[in-house]
Amino acid sequence: MHEFSLMGEVLEVVRDSAREQGIRRVHRIQMTVGALGCVFPPALEQAFGILRDGDALFADATLEIEERPVRVHCNACGWSAEGADARFLCVECGANAVEVMSGEELTIDGYEGE
Image 1 (cartoon, rainbow, N blue to C red):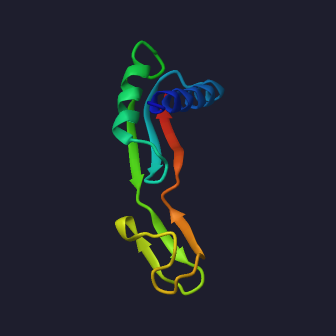
Image 2: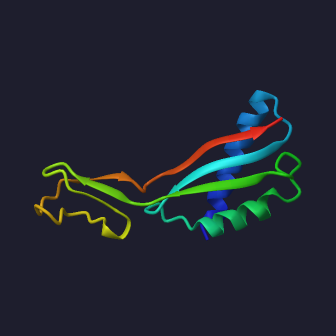
């Protein structure tokens, strides 16, 4: 499961930022995960629970994950779709000018601490 290594990197980024800001306890971490990101949010949450144990900085922290669906838009004709209806070739005009508007995210949106 690559979610463990991803979460390890997330915690390292937050740890470095918290150190720079003088934060001794992180209470909440917010992330966005897109449907195309090949990341399984429940596995990410499980990894977070395991990796935070025994770490005073994250001892009481919670993880909030916003999941983003795939959204596409055809730059040739303006067709748009979301979720299961999203295609990478336009179903209206057949053009391969379809652009992914969301669904590729894997971001740390922020964290709170003291």
